Length: 115
Length: 116
Image (cartoon, rainbow over all chains, first blue to last red; front, side, top):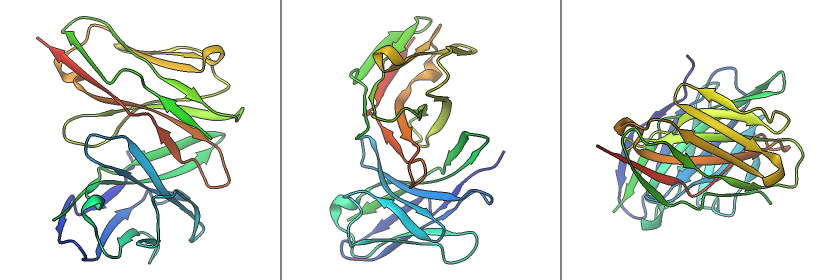
């Protein structure tokens, strides 16, 4: 069973610090995503990434955020200067469409706590 | 714009009861996908089902069943003979196939509590 992995599982950082959340998508998937879930709330789309560039982003994904695929396997989300309200669970996902059917998988999430 | 509504914030049932979680969606696309995910207290998102807009057949998987009705834009989820292990938050989600891939729009979730 293929899986998306994320590291770390929990990150604690101080306000104003930069954080990088890491994801390894499934190897033959083509689209990569980051989602955010503030505690007790719904899961919200942040950004999608295809062919080494952002294909879509939400209004949450402002200049403090950036994504990168630095090599053939990792997909990272960087938050430049964290705020208290960035505390959330961040999910990475990857997808591919085969014979008209979407295969999309989520990673286990990284819980980010900003103090 | 796409939207998913899960009007039930929290449902409590006693073990062995059947329970239905409602999901209503809005989309302008004719091609779309609907999903249900389970989020246990540990926090991960567990995939339960995917259904495309052209397939209105209802589906049953063990104690789980799904009722997709395009006429009412609903994709409801029923758990038969609920168990304590079913306690979790359940999210319905919608994906339109766009040039940006298949981002999901989630509902606000339904917290299901199954008690002994």
